[in-house]
Length: 124
Image (cartoon, rainbow, N blue to C red; front, side):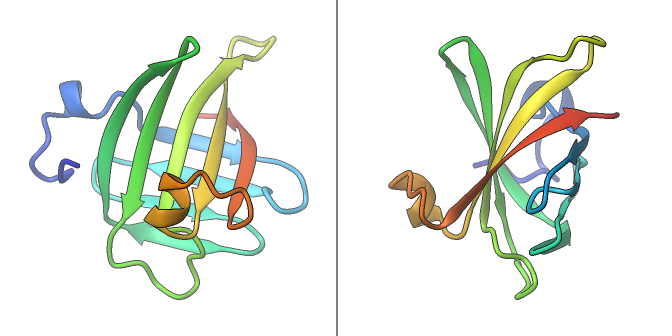
């Protein structure tokens, strides 16, 4: 994984922006900048955390990105966020799926027991 501080933004950061989630567990925002990431939901507060990034490429026609938080706080339930573009909304905006995994091991084993999947609308 590449450190955001060392990365060439044009080549290493195919996505950063603001996504909004809906529903009981997913209500909130996911903000991704070249420097840090925040995912604020009713049950988890990941705020302004540095991260490592990996572009996982395309799978079934959808681009996948992996963000692994470094220096995670107790209020943040997820060490890893896997983000993939799902489709375009009827108004032309992007719909994404964000999956939070408690640990890198949960991500690597694709554990559904310790993960949360949220559909999100790109607002910025």
